[in-house]
Length: 303
Length: 303
Image (cartoon, rainbow over all chains, first blue to last red):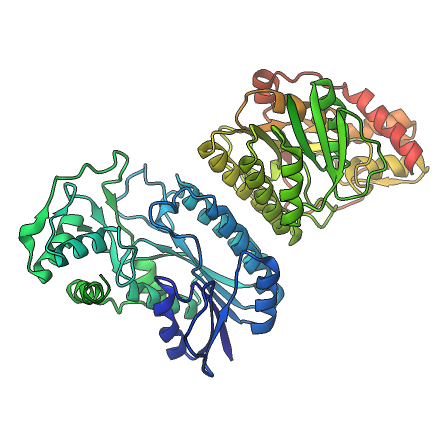
């Protein structure tokens, strides 16, 4: 029997991983720091736990006895997460969760990393897990990088299988409202002007529901080490914004060049997605327009 | 007023740092996990605390309000420390200590790193802080490396000054008895044969009392980043063993080539000590023969 401990289970990505895990015949033990009003079933058991508390983490792992661990939980408050001291709290909590999982006889771990582990000052057409230098410039990136180093070494010496999903740019329902896709979507839905920078920044965008599925496929696979969780498609912010405006029918409200982007903003952040597509075998990407339509529908109901 | 929190204060290096800190006009708050029967004075206050307990760490830092932190405490059991899960406990405890120190308004931090952060599979005449690749191959080395990455980033963004002392090979009183210098010394003092490998391994040996003083000088300096705590002298194990046998007067008991060294043992591990000597300005090395005489005297009293 496969028993997975899923952290961040009510979060941005985690919420969409639940169904895919059940489809893949896991008994899912879903953990959230918030009280959940979702009912537990035979294949989905909800837990409320504070992973910052070492005693609660130890007790949870002892109770669940997971064979698999899919770890999304982290501090992700928009605008603050890059340098927040909470990154260090989550690093400590994640290392402790790893220790308890290993001590409890767990078999495979997948944790969420970030494209911010790569060296953004060293521009690349595509960031590759095998060839691109890792040199994070933020406390968030350094904390994730440190966790991966520890995970890699400790999993290896404990004879446990591990993978590390490096997330690029996601969009979808329940994204923090001030981020790029939600802020444009909300403005246009309200009939307000959407101010944008020049819009020529090239990014790798992926639908959050696809990312959740890709993580579950990664957990199911035997692939080891870092894997970019990304589309591999290079799109400008202008293209994305234009498609949103087109779907909503308000291209007239989109004004590029009315905001000055940060001076240190990289011009290109795109993933090499070959490992995900070829080695993990994930190719079930939702087409961009459908994904944006779903996202816009979500915001219609929530803004 | 300079108030230093000294961890591992009864340990191998820490015990010798106390006097140098007092000489440099610090009020020393010395922490040990073990009960100390040493009496506190105006300039030396002893604390017993379990740094694994986040609440005890927080309480200690709030009480002491240190301006400086000199952190030696770690899991160091000979033979076990390379891969022990306790490395992860100490990594978590050290990150938490860092967080509390920063939150409490601390100004400068020095922590103990290791030559095992360098890539030993990539032989160098001398490992340099600036030029030699860091690529630790053990859980101990990875844990120290991860801690340094976190310390570097968090100190920088918190506007706190930091340095990181990479320890090479130390010898002196209270070294674990099964390590190289004590095991030969004890055999010869007991009139027993001392079995050695070929003895051609080249190492950087430093007297532990000198290392403690060098750490205090590093704390006093404004030098930032990693600094090798080492002699910069390349000596074979044969030379060291020969000098010990000569001092004790039993060269007849020394038998090289009677032990097979580990296959993956590096042939040369020597530090570039220029940063310590030129930038920190530490040059008060005890000459090797005097240091070995002191060490042998210690073992005469303790074995």
